Structure formats: structure tokens, C-alpha cells
Amino acid sequence: MHTGILANKTVLELGSMIAAPFATHILNQLGATVIKIEPPAGETTRKLVRGGPSGTYIAYNRGKQSICLDLQTDGGREIFRTLVEKADIVLHNLSPGAARKLGVTYENCMAINPSIVYCHIKGYGEGPLAEEVASNPIAEAATGVMYSNRIDGRPSRLGPSYHDQFAGCYAVIGILAALMAPEGTPERHIEFGLYETGLHIAARDLVGVQLKSQLLGRPEQEPSPEFSIPGYGAYETRDGRWIYLVMLTDEHWRKFCRAVPIEASDELATLRQRRRQRPQVEEIVGTAVRSLDYDGLAKKLSAEGVGFTEVLSLDRVLDAPQAQEPRKYSEFTFAEYGFEAPDFPLSYNVTQVRAAGSPPLLGEQTSALLKGIGYDDTQIRSFLDDGAAVTADQEASLWAKVSKPEPVTG
Image 1 (cartoon, one colour):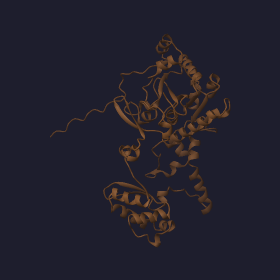
Image 2 (image 1 turned 90 degrees about the horizontal axis):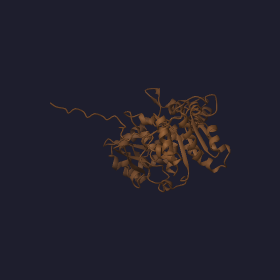
Image 3 (image 1 turned 45 degrees about the vertical axis):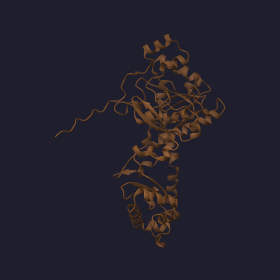
Image 4 (image 1 turned 90 degrees about the vertical axis):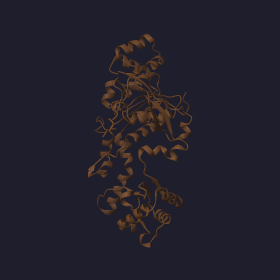
């Protein structure tokens, strides 16, 4: 059984990719029961890696229940209505057109259950683009993030889908606030866009450009700290590892000089001086780092209170003592493979929640959930025979296996 602040809440998720599944992942970690409603083909992330589930699906759908429904059939819609009657929260990131087509709009759900908390993560909020579809990279491009992030001069996405994940967090904030609001109030209808999420995230940089434009009399892009502050960035150590240094202030610089040690000359004492002599400072820092092995340098920097970390490849991240002591991830199996996935970081909430199980197979809990909401065996068999509902194929292989390479001879 779940415990935790949302232990008595049931969430219906009609989610795909990241934004909605990430939001319900957090709600599940806070104790809520999450029922993932999927179409017969499954949601998108079930088929992204060699025809099977991707890391996104495995990481953000563990601990949920999957019911597979065809909402374009009368039977599928009937089941959905019954689920909504008994649920507390509906959350999805379908396009506005798809939500109307499938009958899962706010108006549809409110007519079934007036006390429902309804959250729709859209591409765009209110405005001329409200009906358009948007994704994480579109939000990056439209809100200024992509313009400065270039590969060989070409604007490029960041890589991780941070806008999707921020939107998921905003959805959770909105849902928690709505649960505190009286039934029937507008606060229980939450609707916002990835675009508006991106605008809010970009506020610091947008305001920074405005400030510089007014101070300098011309628009100027606000660079990231590592492009504007010497000594701020990644440097290679003598043993071929990479260390990331944070030197924002003059005190940071003095601490680094004491740690290495090098002379903290008066000519480089202030950030303005160091910026004027950036190539010289970069050479000083790079040479100092290259003269030491990582472990020795780390010990010196830590003793002086310098901000740093090793730049780790993904396969090494969860081996770090900070990730393991206490353990900040859950271990579980899915198909025949074992996984370790980081948990929601508010540990005092998560530790009271049951250990998250594997992510569900497509339709794994369909029959059990149908029985739980009042359908008998004959009705369930009818839904399955008609294709309104689908159960999991327990024997199906999830991924196309990589064939073993032929042995090299001669």
C-alpha cells in the first residue's frame, strides 16, 4: 500500500513522451495511485529503442498501472467515464484536437465528475497558437534558448528535455494547489503550455538582455558564465579526467590560487581584470589543472572550499558515493533486465512510499482495473473481444536483440 501525502488520490494519466508522464511520476512518488491509460499501440516511448521501451519510459513510468483502451470505441469511452467517476485527478499532454476527438477535455471530465482536478499540458497556452502542437525543442527555439546553443554555428537543442520536465513540475505544483482549493473553483482547471513554461524559465536571460541593451545602447545576447568568466568551465587533469570549476567571484579565484597553489597577482585580482586578460587566465588555470592528477587536485580544492566536480559519463554517475550514501535511486527489473533509476529528491516523502515496482507492460492491469471499477468477468471479456480494452501479452519480447558479432579469426 502507498503511504505519503497523496496516498488517497487516484490519478488518470493520458500521457506520452515526457511532460505528463514525468508529472505523474512525481505524484506517484508522493503516494498517489497512477493509472496510465494507453491506446492499443501504446504510448510513444514504448517503441523508441529497438522497437521497445526507451529509458524515458522505464525511468518515469515505474510504479504505475497500465490500462489499454481504445477511446475511439463506445466501450472504451464507457470505461473511461467509469474511471473518471472514481478518480481525483486527470492529467494529459494530448493535443487540443486529440483531446476533443477522444472526449477527454475539461468539459467532458467535469460533466462526469464535478470534483475532478484536471490538468492539460499543451504546446501553447492561450493565444493565437493555442491549437498548435509544440514539443521540447520547439519551446527551446521559440524562447531564446536554442539561439545561443550552437553546434558548428547551427542552433541546436540542449539535449535533455528540460522544458518537458519543468512543465511536469509546474503541473504538480498546480495540482497540489488545486487540491487545496474548494470544489468547483477555477483553480481545479489547470491548463498551460510548454511555450509559456519556456518563457518563465528564460526570464533571467530575457531580462539580462534587456538590461545590457539599456546600459550599452544596443541589444546584446547574455552569454553563459563559462563563456564570459575565465576559470569557469571544464579542464583536463594530468590523468585524463575532466574537472568542472566554478569561479564566479574574486574570492573564488583567490581560493583556487591558494589550493593549486599559484600566485594570486594584483593584476588579476578582480573579475574585470581577469576578463580583460582572459587568454592569460585560461592558460594559468589550464596549466595548473594539467599539472595534477584528479584525486590530488580534488583534495586541494575541497580543503579551500572551491566549487568543483568531476565531469562524469552517464555510466559512472550512480557509482558516485553521493548517489549511493544514502542510496538515491531504486533498483528494479523490467523484462529480464535490471535497472537503477533516481528517485524524487524529497526523501522524507519518498521513504514513506512503497518501493516503486517495474514499469507496467502495455495493458498489464487492464483486467484487474476493470474488475476493480465494477465490471464482471462477462463484461470484461466482451470489452476485450470488441477491442475496447486490451490486456498485456506477457510472452512478447520487448526489444529486438542485438545479434552477437561473429568471432574474429586469422
